[in-house]
Image 1 (tube, rainbow, N blue to C red):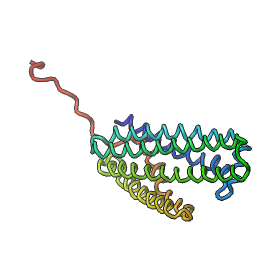
Image 2 (image 1 turned 120 degrees about the horizontal axis):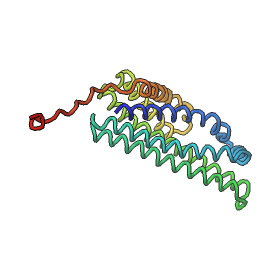
Image 3 (image 1 turned 180 degrees about the vertical axis):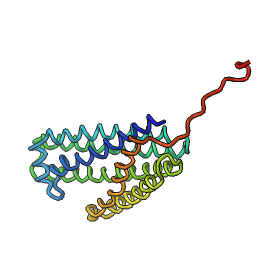
Image 4 (image 1 turned 135 degrees about the vertical axis):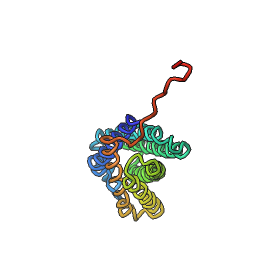
Length: 231
């Protein structure tokens, strides 16, 4: 099972590092909260960068499915039903994420049409960007739910140090609470982002651990020939 563990570790590290880079290099440069006219201007001026972000998001959510599958393979022997639940929640994360990509495509199409006046276009940009933001919050909800289940199973299994899996459980509970608060009270979004920190720390830590150490599993017994064959 260690080959699946190392695959999961590589995916954890790839997803978390590239997601942070995408947020810094693309999202923060193109999207200006509350200033939809400026957001439209920036995306129009650097449409290729925005499209690159959409391609990245597509590949990243495909990676999420591969990560969830590897974790399911590792943890199904601990509790198959809970491992399946974790897999389904992480798949829901990827599906909602794909919907945010489609909203981004609609945004590009809107900015390339002359069918709307400036004010109408800015209003539609507002709707699409806000919907994408809510979509990202829903992504975090399903990410948190799936990760809580997988981290709980890692804790139960003892495959990795329990302090690490315990950090994951606590970190994603905090992320879930922060995201739900952000959905209910959008004005608290910036403060809620602080709740992401423990989950991000866990993903970096578990990625390195799985990639370098793998998981602590007993050697599988080697099948012995039956008495009739030995005779």
